[in-house]
Length: 516
Length: 120
Image 1 (cartoon, rainbow over the protein chains, first blue to last red):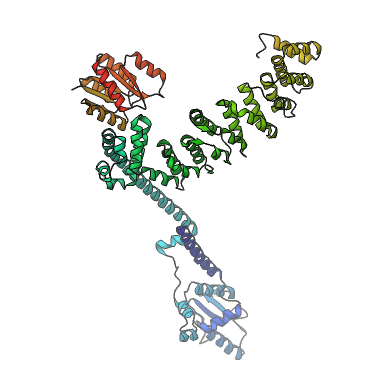
Image 2 (tube, rainbow over the protein chains, first blue to last red):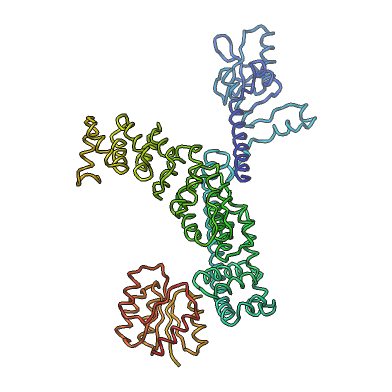
C-alpha cells in the first residue's frame, strides 16, 4: 500500500512539473504591444534585433546615428533619432524592425523577443531587481534547464513512468513470491525432517513403555521415569508433542485390549489431554475439530464440557464433530444438545449420527423422545427416522399423541414410521391424512393404510375413491382397500362402473402387472 | 534362534511387533515395502513371515505368491485391517497362510500365535 501511494505521489509530482513546462511554452510574454514597446525601451539592446528608419516610400533614411547598414541596436536610441528626424521636418519616418538584419513585422519581432525571454536567452535588464536581489529576479538570470534531465528524464514522461513502474512492481512481486515460496518450502522440509526424526525418537520408548510397564505403573509413573523415555526438553517442543499425539492416536486405533488402556493412561500422564483442551479453546476451526477428534479417540470424557460449547457452532465441521463426540462419549445421552441445534441437519450428518446411534442404542440410554420437541424440523424428522431404524416401538404412542399438532412433513415421516414398523395406529392418524388436501400426505397415507389402517379406513377409502385426484392415488387406495378387506374391495368393484377404477382393478388382478 | 521377517509399512506397528517378538527371543528382519520383502525372502533363511496386505510397490498377496514359490515351507501370518477387501483376505487364505490377524490387534496375542505357528 505504501509503495503504491509513493508511486502515485511521484507520478503526480512529475505530471505537475511536466504540465508547468508546457504552460510556460504557451505563455504570452507580453500582454500587448505597449508592454512590448515598454520592454524594448527598458531593455535597450537585444541580440539579433535592430531598427532602422524608412520614409513613406520605403526608402531607408540614413543619418550619422542611423547608418544604412546594420541599423540601430537600441530601441530608445532609435526612437530618439526618429524624433530628431521629425523635428527637422525633413520626412515622415517609420521605425522598421530587423531580426538578424532581415526586415520583420512588429508582431514577428515581438514573438522573437518573447522566444528569447522564454528560453532565457536574454537577461532582463531591470535595475530594481538587481538592487533588491529578489530570488525570482535572480532566477530569471539563470538559463532554463529542465528539472529532470539525464536518466531521471524518464520519470518526467508519465507513460514511460507507468510502464517502468509496472515492470518494476512485477519483478518485485515475482521475487517476493519466489522468496516466500522458498522460505515456505524450507520451513516445511525442516518440519518434515523434524517429524521423521521425532518419529524415530518416539517409537522405541513408546514400544518399551507399553510392553514393560503395567497400566498401574504407567498411571503412577514419576516425572523422572517419564523423562527417561521422553526427555523433558523435548516435551516442551510443540512439534514433538504433536508427533507424540499423532502416534498415540494412530496406535490406539490399531491396538486392542490393555494396550488401549495403557495408551490412554500415557496420553494423560504426558499431559497431552491438556493440549487437546487447548485446541478446543482455539479460534481456528481445524484446530477445534482436531481437538475433538483427539478427545473422541482417547475417550476423554472430562473434556465433554468444552465439546458441548461447540454443538451449535455455525461451522458445519465443528458442530458435526461435536455432536459425534458427545454421542460417542456421553454415558446418559439425553440428546438435548442435538434437540437445541438451530442449524438444519444435512443428509451426511444424519448418516453419521445414525451410524453412531445404531452402534450405541443397545448399550446406552438414548432419550430419543427429546428430539420430537425440537423447534428445528430437520431434527424432529431425524428423530422419527431413528424410531423406525432402531425399532423404538415404545415411542410410537408419543408420536401418535403429537401427530395432530405437527406440520405436514412431520406427519408424512410419522406415518412412514408406523408403516415401516407395521404397528396399527389410531384411526384418526391415517383417516385424517387420507382426506388431506396435501397430495403428498394423502398418497403416503393411502400407501400406509393397507398396513396400519382398520375397517373404518376401508370404509373411508370407498367413500373417497371416486373423487380421488389422479390415477396413482386411486391405484394406491385400491391396493390398500384390497389388503384391508378383499370382500369389500370385490363388492366395490362389482358395483362401481367407473372405467378408471375398472381398469385399475384389472391391472391389480393381473398376476403379471399387479406389482408394476 | 528363529528368524522372522516382518513386512509392514507402518513404522509404529512394525516397531511394536519387532519389540514384542525380540522380547520373546526371536531374531527379526524389518522391511517397509514389497520389493524389500521379496529381496529378504530370496536372500535370508527364514522361519516365519509376517506381512501386511496393503504395502508399497508389491502387495501382500504378491509377497505370499512369491514366498510360496521360493520358500514353500515357511509359514506366513497376514496382519491386516478388517476393512480390507474380503476377496483379498480369502485369496490369502487360499494361498495357504498359517494365520490371519485383523487390525486392531493385541501384540501379545500376535506373539502367542507366532509361538503356535512356529511350534507346528
